[in-house]
Length: 417
Image 1 (tube, rainbow, N blue to C red):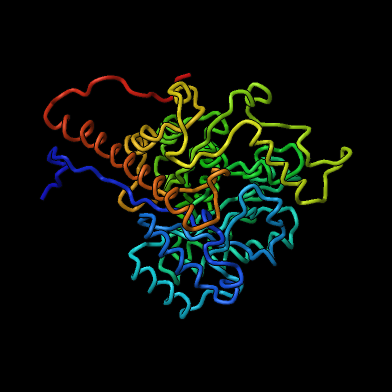
Image 2 (cartoon, one colour):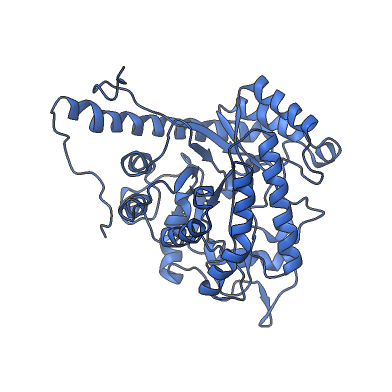
């Protein structure tokens, strides 16, 4: 029997809305979760239900006692909600799955965001081994994917990093494929990873790069294991817009590459942009002392001024937008973002994750009672925007065409400047 959509009926397809658990790192105090490592996941699942999320993106990371980068050197320290100092075993996984069943909140994927092409071979091996531990945990938790970065060797050119990717990252994807997992790449350029002047420190930062990496993976039989977890905030950071990116992927014959979304905006500061332009602040940041890179992590955190000098992250629903900002790619047009995805991408919207990632600094309060209504409001905003886009798509691409009724207007168009 034909579906309602195929018959021209109104059958909008909304997405499941989730939240990254790094939004509240100290939901479970460190002294409690270090002693009982799965308590943090249980409490986050309960908190996600409280704020109205359908899913969580479960954050994992090297424990602060094991990490090579101290928290004070990070712009957005990554939570190890899923504690993998010891590998996840069946008993621990069963406990977490029981909490999933009890709360009704699913785990979309496990996220570990680190530089997997680190220059130091020992540190790279440590990070890769931890990612393999994340893979094994994802299998035991019965989730389909992991999410993370590629990274970059800062002492090598982009072309040399492609060779490095083929030698070092493709074997990691073979391990993902062997476990039936998809590796979803988040495309942040990570300008604050280094105290030099490099801005693009994550190799997979832009669509042309995604395509090249995918071609490499295809040659090695792991192309289906590499996908993109698209984050529009990073497109805004680099002067791009979502619709043009999605159109480019379609034009290049790879509209299937995007497999999920981070819902995080970027609000460009026009004064900062006038001062420094795209690419951000390149000197006087405070990460050097007398012309020499500082060894102090607090100073090293100033490397992020390459980004924050021109913009600030947006928690969806919390920022006022000048309509001109949409037209000049200085803020995310959330409605068109979700509409363009449906018009241009090859994606199963009922299954693809739509994950709220909270990195708006002033609102990143680490108190459950204070943060709950903030996340609740952003999640509800995201859900309603997505539902509106789903309704628009169904009307414009299914209902009206089935009855021979023209669609009015032009709408936003790709590649317009």
